[in-house]
Length: 196
Image: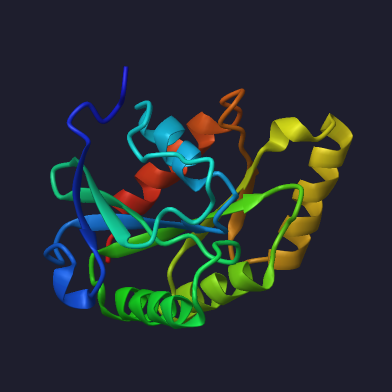
């Protein structure tokens, strides 16, 4: 049973003028195209195919707004770093995300989805920089934890925590085994409840 039974897709935006009304509270979800962003959203909301998953990385090409409940939203940002798209489109995405981070008053936090096997990439650091410029709390989900042996996963978590220090909180996560789902939901709840 979903903890957000009323959760629903609201709209896609390809320009700042198309964003939903800037009220209530929302948490953005960003990550490399093949890091498991849609799967993570589906597990956290506990709804299958809520955010559509695809075998082709980079399918999220707009900013997708999902309503959770009472003026609370999850916002799925375009995947980056892998999709085979023209430089012009990449530039458009970058500008769209800059508009989003710099203008949204309702934005309370960022979930950064990172494949534990690849760790942080230059694109992830760019996203962390976006968040830092607006003093946005960030939580990193190290996805696909089930793909590593326990010792390797523990080592990777320590490395990323050491690398990020106070910049973000970090946890293990697996959409396959559902490892870390409660911790992720708790963090989401804390962000949505935070005062602006």
